[in-house]
Length: 112
DNA sequence: GGCGTGACTTATA
DNA sequence: ATATAAGCCACGC
Image 1: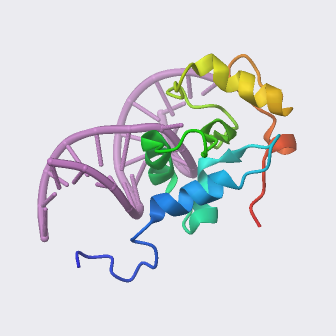
Image 2 (image 1 turned 30 degrees about the vertical axis):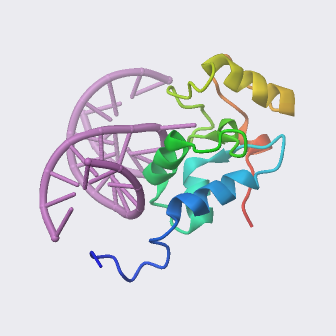
């Protein structure tokens, strides 16, 4: 039983994160903290990154729509080509800077 | 049940 | 703006 037996999510935090990322609308981006909060806790920021790192289903999980708190793509987003990352977002209608910045005030998705 | 790791976040210099 | 430090939580062995 380990410790945190009071937490409601112990059994599928990853699953929860995947679910949230999966329902991100096209042409929008979500931040790790936002996804973490949507999944249940704003402190899962690292867990979100870890969850996407293992990324069991890159075809189902649009990791490229997940950016950091500054609307910046992660430096280790290399899954088939870090450049393809920005290209995908642009293809969705999101403007991405050469550094990987996106306009959060315009494309940041808000979880309800 | 403990240790190490990590695609984050926030704060300070 | 960048760099460094500490904190947070979950997974794997």
